[in-house]
Length: 430
Image 1 (cartoon, rainbow, N blue to C red):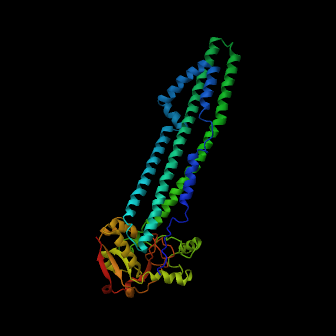
Image 2: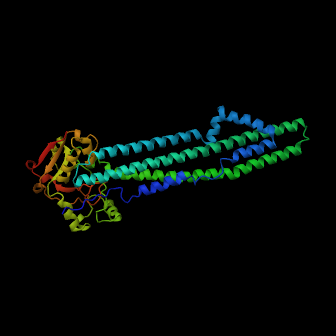
Image 3: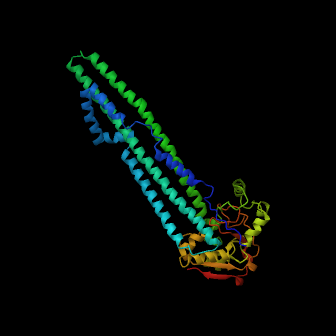
């Protein structure tokens, strides 16, 4: 009986979908917006007009000037914010959401081409990519949530803008009106002017002391929700980065003896690895060269079952020039490999599409077009087959205990420097 296929993916247990759905619902509900702020401005203008009709008339002219003439317009926007700019941010996030959903749809079409394919590696790959599709759709929804929040924030900014504009215009208009009354009455209207001024100041204080704090608090609450959504994008990016990004530089690049086995030892799904996240993190935190033998923290049966995947041989991908110059071993003589049978399944499923195969194997785009060869090592030639410890030259900062790649492919380490070149099969990929 065949062993069960591990279809867990790096996204399992991250709860990105659930957290994102809750945050988007919270933003779109509008519960964070203080109620009633959209209607009070007109009412206050009516009160002001009754108290001081001349001042209100002057204020209307001043308000028009502040809205249309520079530098008054720029000063006002600098003080209160530009609602049009915020609305532009909203449209940008709408575009981002549409692009994310389109990417998810495109990936779904590609996966549909593999419906007739079978094999453990193919099933693991499909499970991983289907999870990616779901999270891309979710990320599109998150972007829509940010867009909705920005659109509502644009309304709030416009209200604050109008409040400040009207307050400044009415205050200046009233001062001009009161000065006119005092001049025309030779000071006899001073008691009335004082009463009018007190009423106007009281109205302005009432308006700003109750409404502005509500609007500021609403923006603060929106900011927290948007920050939480941004954190989801960061978490999504981190998980996808660890799952798909391939190491480079001195540890596992494509130069000298640092050629990758074909897929980097990055974060494996933790569904089948008998370690807690804390245990895995503790091992990873140890400096390379001091990490313990996997036999000290992994059950013997788990290791045996894992290595049984390589009974049909081992495979790696590398640059042809590096193979000629250095052989299959890295600088410490070790070589990361994948099960030959699993690689065969993936190549059969990918057909002639090198990009699909690159995605399945976790290789950089265009890697198979750079003079890369597939190296197959028979099981009886793969000396020292073992679980990676993380002390190997090819293990970079993304290495995680457990011997699995994010796409579900197992990987192991052999003593590549001892492999007889005459006993391996080399095939140029093109």
